[in-house]
Every structure is written in C-alpha cells, then in structure tokens.
Amino acid sequence: MPDPMIHTIAQIIEKLELAHLHREVLEPDPKTRSLLTQAVGQYAAEFIDAIDTHKSFDARWDTLNYDFFKLDTKPISLTEFLIHFQSDVQRPGLNPASGGHLGYIPGGGIYVSALGDFLAAVSNEYAGLFYAGPGAVRIENSCIRFLCNTFHYPESAHGCLLSGGSLSNLTAMTTARIARNIRARDMESQVVYMTEQVHHSVPKSLRLAGMEDMQVRIIPIDAQYRMDMEALEATIKKDIQDQFTPAILIASAGTTDTGVVDPLNAIAELAKKYHCWFHVDAAYGGMFILSALTRNLFEGIAEADSIVVDPHKGLFLPYGLGAVLVKNGMHLHQANRYKASYMTDAQDHTEEWSPAELGPELTKHFRSLRMFLPLKLLGIKPFIACLEEKIWLCRYFYEKIEALGFERGPYPELSVMIYRAIPPSGDINLYNKQLVELLHQDGRVFISSTVLQGQVWLRLALLSFRTSRYHIDTLLDMIQKALKQMK
Ligand SMILES: *Cc1c(COP(=O)(O)O)cnc(C)c1O
Image 1: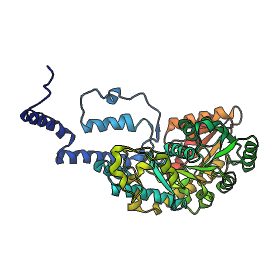
Image 2: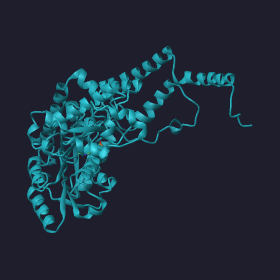
Image 3: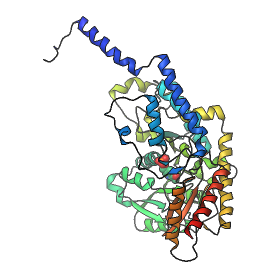
C-alpha cells in the first residue's frame, strides 16, 4: 500500500524522529569527531615522518585487495580503512608526495595547504558569488591578484582558479575564441601556432573547445628546443599571403620535456605585429619568475593575453590547483557570464568580481584557501628558496651525470633536463629503455623518459619542495648500479 498523500502532524513528527537517528551518523558527537580527526592526523604524521624511507615508485600492483575498492560492502572502521589506504592506495605506483619524485612534473604537497583544504571542507564556504561568500571570494580574488602581480599584469587583468593546467588551458583557448569572435564557420581560415614541444593539454583543449578545425602550424624548434623565430614569422607571412588569418600564438614558459622557455619577448612582438592572441603556457615554469636566477627568461610574459600557471607545481601545493590569467579580465567575463532567474539575488552585488562569472564552475571547491593559507602563514620567501634549490640541484646533476659518461641535452634553464646513456655498442634507444626499466624496479627515486625526434632520453624533473641533494645522490647511485647490472 502506498503512503497516503496527506499525513497528520503526529505522523510527520514520527518520520522526522526516525530520520534524526540517521543524521547522528553523519554528524558524529564531539568525542567521536575528535577520535576520527586524531586518527587521520596521526596517519599523516607517520606518513610524512617516514617519507624518505619509502620507495618513490613501487611497481607491484598485484597485491591489491580488491574488496577494499567495492562500495557495496558493509561499513568498516576508520582504523581498518587506514590500513587499506596505506597498503592499497599509498604504496602501489608513484608516491607524488615524495622528494624522490623526479618524473613528469612533481610538486610535493605542503602540509599547511592540506590544512587549508580541511578548513575549506569543514566550513564549506562558498567562493562562487561575492554576495554569498564575500570573505571566501576575497580570498579567491586575492590569490588571483597575487598571481597577476607575479607576472606584472595590469589592474585590468583577472583570472580563475581551476583544478589544474589542463582546465586552465581549456579556459584560455575558449576565452581566446570568444574574444576574437572565431565562429564555427570561420574556423578553417584561422591559424594557431605552436611547437611540437607544447604540452598535450593544449591541442586537447583546442579539440574540447571545438577549435580543432582551425589551421594548426607546428613551428620548428631550434637546437635548444625553443620556438624558431625566423620560422614563425615566415610561416605567418605565408599564411597571410594564402588568405589565412593568424589568430592564436602559443608559447611555453618551461616545456615539460626539456624545461626551456620560448623566446617570449620576440613572440610577443610578432603577436602584436600580426594581431594574434598571445597565450603562454607557464603551468610548469611560471613560478620561476620569482627567482632572480631565472627571472630574465620571462621577459615579455606580461604582453601575453593569457597565461596558465599551476600552483600545484611551482608552489608545491597538493594536486588540484591551476590558474588561468587573462590580461583583459573582461574577456574572461565575456566568456563565462550568464543569466538565470534563480541567480537574481546575487547579481546586484558588484563590489568584487565573482569567480562564478569568471570560470565555468558554479558550485565550486573553495580551492583558493589551499594556496592562501600557506602564503599567509609562511610568506613567499621559503617558496622562492625551494625553487632556487631545484635550479641548483638540476645544475648539480647536469655536472655529475657527465662524469658517468652520459650525453646531456641543453644546459638546464629551469629545473628540467634530459640525458641519455651511450652504450659501447648496440641500439641506444633500447639501452636507455632498459635503463629506465631497471631504475623503476629499484624505485628509490622515480624518473621518467621521453622521446625527442625519435631518440629516447631520460628526464630529470625537479619541482618537489622535498627534493634535496640526498635524492639526487640516490639517483646517481641507482644509475651506477643499473649500468653495472646491464654489463
Ligand atoms: C602540467 C602541465 C600542464 C597540464 O597541467 P595539469 O595541472 O596537469 O592539468 C600543461 N602545460 C604544462 C607546460 C605542464 O607542465
């Protein structure tokens, strides 16, 4: 029998009391809450204290307890959960928090930032609209302002904090398309320029943003893997001659493969001369503008129409924070503005920009707190010092690896470099693949490899704040051991 449509007040109160019992499970009492928080705090403390005694990479995936991953089982205790978390989540694969993570682009994950996430989650403050969360929105906007100032952007600039560089690149490309009013019907006459060294999230963004039918010109690179300026201008001139419209120029400020910065000043000049949207993907390298050692590489970046930077790389935050900055903030607003009848209360408040009008999200994670809290408590100096330590460590490795007879790529501009072993005879690529395999089996520190113009190279990518000389010396030791094994 279905419930009758109309209940008496007594019946309704009875139902409410039943529901209340369940609510108590979701809102633990103070004692339970404190025990839960303590257990997680204890786990975190032990994890960090022992971080250098664990492998950075563990290639054993086979011992996973598959029952742990099922959700249709009966509830378990937090103690039991943490045991599985350690053995089935934390141990296998890569340990991205480790100072021995020297592959891809690391970052680390500073503890104070995790506390920011905790506060953001517990308070569940809403950082989408100024009128609902004026404090949270001011924190969001303050982080954006900090980043804009870092790149010497004018007051008119604004930006949006997103989950990472990929969504930031997507937002930049969408903004460029809307700002330049590139319609579907014009797509095939519009040209976008980049090198083969651009991060794959850029072409992926073009696809996601419906811009795949644009003409894509892959500009040759010079011996340092940077965009070749003569080739760029020649290509643009030819396009104009052929009745195409140069539209978007994409530079990298710190490429993923070799860590080099494209000649931003020269590209900026061409962008101006040929009326292109100038985008700089500085997801990896951007924060190095803060160091006197590398600042000059970024000259011209303030001319960019849009910049992407990843605080979860260069500010060592845990995964989940990238930023897109747009020199003329109105373009970002134009791309993300909306009208909705249920939002009218919010739209009378214009004292501050609302993040929901500057990015694709509405109900959003209060993600600025994970950046704001550490900068507020620690200041920027320790961050710069750690970035510089990575620069020096990279130069240290560059010298040390030559002594082991390795061929090296260009001198490191930032904190990524490539190198490869040259065997006495046989296939060089195969030899280096075997070497990487052995290094992964060892796993004390983790490195990755790449393929450049058909050649296999090993990469060293330093950006975890936890990485010290200890990890570099460990890598050198691992390499020597692996070479002996291969003899
Ligand atoms: C890491 C990276 C990206 C992608 O950013 P995610 O945060 O991984 O989404 C884009 N461009 C460059 C240059 C990068 O290093």
